[in-house]
Length: 452
Ligand code: MG
Image 1 (cartoon, rainbow, N blue to C red):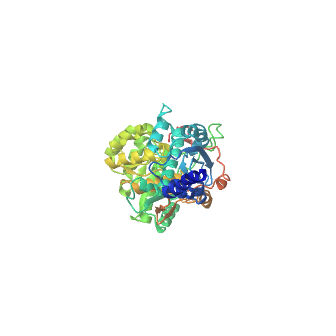
Image 2 (image 1 turned 90 degrees about the horizontal axis):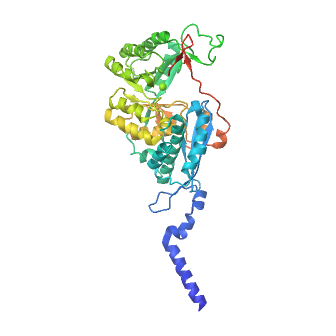
């Protein structure tokens, strides 16, 4: 009697398990442990218990020379994690405790799904609005959560941002040299490889070598650091129009030419020089003024129609909301991790759409390959994409970052991998420790500092 009464519920339970799917036999096959062994990410399911954050940590590496900071967000789902770029290359070591100490505690146990809420709560809970260190840490978290969301949806992140607005991401590449002939050779080489846009720099920051015949010996004067840069503004202002003239003569009209001023001359000098470049049809001139000189834009805009890119040093929407709404420049040049990741960058991009300000996200070697992937996914999705600063990564960087983006025919090729489509090999990353760096002080001949 007892046997019968005991076995009946057992049989019923077994039948129920078979019938219930995810909570029955299927559930056994689909348990987190088994899925992890199969290297499968569980798809988002309505009503399923939340996937929570178990740990947030920073990984530092410098395989390409620049200090890079990556954030890894680990979750309650075995094998499921996300990566984000938190690279503030000049102060990389300071971002690490912001991630490992602060963000780790802040995020533990929270649902991975609610990115907007997570971003806002992390941003506002410091009471004083974030500066570059906390913004970069937050970007690492934000991008990693988008990566996780993509993996759970089994879709590339650009699909979650609205899908494609274009086939591939058009890039520009850097040509620099000490002579105009050397720069023209590089431009031609890049054109032959398929690029349609090339940034040209001669000497100084962003170029090769210094301007002027006599570079001051700051060390001998017992002033400043010998490694500090030097810029001769007058020489710079003479050279740039000659460089453009030479490129147009040598390389023709088919290539789009860009130039970054790096804010290194007086605003009125910048306006005069940009005006003189009109005849060479620049695609854009970047960073004519330091962020402290924003009011000069009005005079620049009424003086010349040369397209302008600005915003590399912006890190808070209050710095660029008004200039964008007043169409004071044509391309917004934010460093996405500096803003706080994909979430705020999408808002900047959408703001630009209404004022016909196009995107040109910062993308040099001190944006990690994870950050480049974040740029690329946004670039594919937003309507008002302009151009993307491209980077050709060396073999060491590729070994550290499996899935590192590649450029073909001048276009970044974005794969269909779920999430951001990039990983990190931590063993390889550890081979390239970060170094103290970031003293990019630029000086005049008399030793006075030039504001970037
Ligand atoms: Mg720049």
